[in-house]
Length: 318
Ligand SMILES: Nc1nc2c(c(=O)[nH]1)N[C@H]1C(S)=C(S)[C@@H](COP(=O)(O)O)O[C@H]1N2
Ligand SMILES: [Mo]
Image (spheres, rainbow, N blue to C red):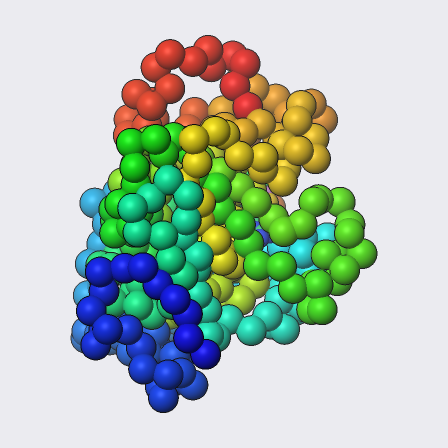
C-alpha cells in the first residue's frame, strides 16, 4: 500500500512497506528512545505505572500539579463514537485499529499529503506535558501527556498566509463505532477546530502518549489534540485529517447545540452552561470530603493565552 505524499521527506526516511507490520513497534521504540533511561518511580509503582523519568518536560508542565492516577484517566472517558456511557466507551474503544495510521494534511498549505504517523513522529520532539484538563461537564483531572507541539507539525507542511483556521477530523469507522452506525447525536465523523493562532500556540499539543507509554485507545490513540485552556470536547481523539482553512470550520458540538458549545469554548467560570454552573469542578480521584476546585479562567493558563483574546468580550464567551 502506497500513500502518495508531496513532501520533502527523503524517500529513505519514509517507512519501507516491508516494515509495515512493525509500525506499532517503531512508535514504541521512538517513545522509548525519547525517554532513554526508563526507571520505575516509587511514587507511581503502586499504580503499576512506569515513570519515564528523563522524557524532557515541556516548559509548561507545572511541577505543582499532581497527575490523576492513570487508572482513573483510563476508565472515565468520553468517546461518543463508541458509547454515551464512560465505562462502555472505554471497553468498546479497544476495537479500534490504530496501526497503521496516517494523517491527511491539506488545504492552505504548501506541502499537503498523507503522512504516516511514524514518519511524523520521527521529526518531532516528544515531551511530557502535565496539563490540567477540564471537561465541560464540570469534572477535571491532571494528565501527564506525551506529545509534541502542533505548531511544529504545521510548520513542517508550511501553512500559507491564507490559513486562518485549522479543522481536525476524527476517524470514521461505523463498523466498530456503534453510535456512528446509528447516526446517534452528533454528525459524524467528530470534527473540531481552532483559530490558526490557537493552533500555533506552544501550549497546544498533539498527544501520542500518556504516563510515559503509548496513548490508551480510549484516550484517543494513536493521535489526539490537547488544548488545555479549552473545554475537553475540543481535544479531539483519533485524528485522521488536519485541514488548514480560510474560514471557520463547522465543528460537531457547536453544530449540535450552538448555544451550549461554542467554537471557542475557553474554560470560563463566569459563563455558565445553560444547564449548569461552570464556576467549580469535581476533581477526579479526590476524596468525598475534598471540596470542589474553583474553576479558573482559561483553566489556569491565562498568563499564556489571554492575549489571544484581547479583543473579545469574555462575558459572552463560549
Ligand atoms: N473523537 C472524539 N474525541 C473526543 C470525544 C469524543 O467523543 N470523540 N470526546 C471529547 C470530550 S467531551 C472530552 S471531555 C475528552 C475526554 O478525553 P478523555 O476520555 O481522554 O478523558 O475527549 C474529547 N475528544
Ligand atoms: Mo467533555
